[in-house]
Length: 252
Image (cartoon, rainbow, N blue to C red; front, side, top):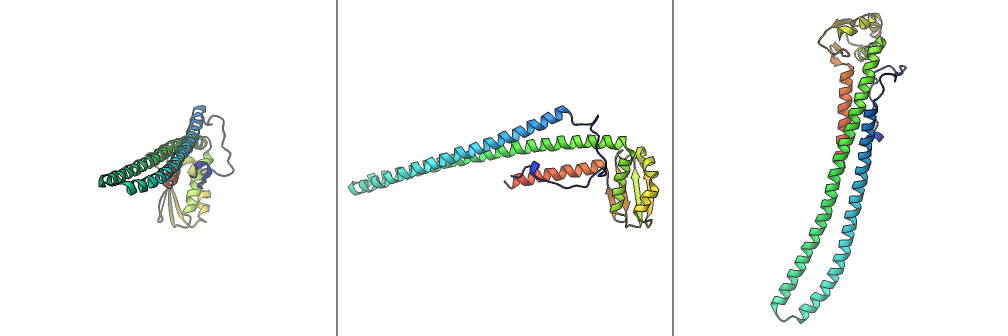
């Protein structure tokens, strides 16, 4: 299985590349880091448990094969001797029944070995799913707090979000930008720069709505409606990561 630590998912950066995230006042809490470490330990323990269960079941199967082969050889010799010396039909019927019973017991033991592996796999998958989902949630919560802090502290950070969204539709003839009242002044003050992104070919309008999230940015054009807000991007990232987890577990 490819763990999340080995899987790279590329997303569009929310903040500009040259902006360093300040750790003071908004770093991950020790509790969140402790939960991440506990989740990783659970993953390691689950992998060890799965390996041990596979090894135990394989040893059981090998022992049963040897036992069955030895018994089969003994049964074959005994069967020939009994059939040769048997004078009554009941002896032969009893022998055949004994062989059938032994075969059923052997198959039952093999089924038990397979059940051990199935149970180990189910437990392993459940532990992996729970641990990786915990890691994803903790990472996204930490990212959301850090990004939210950055947007609240730096006006240009949110404007950069708007710029990236406009670049997606800059060839459209009409572009409407809708933001929260808290962000309107910062965005409106950069209207000329935003207009230059479209090479002054688009009719660019900026509107304000108090029913949108403070970090939301709605871009409407003939191309359609784009929600370029931070919350929306984090939501899409969360969905993508969970799809990766489910896909990897499904391929096991």
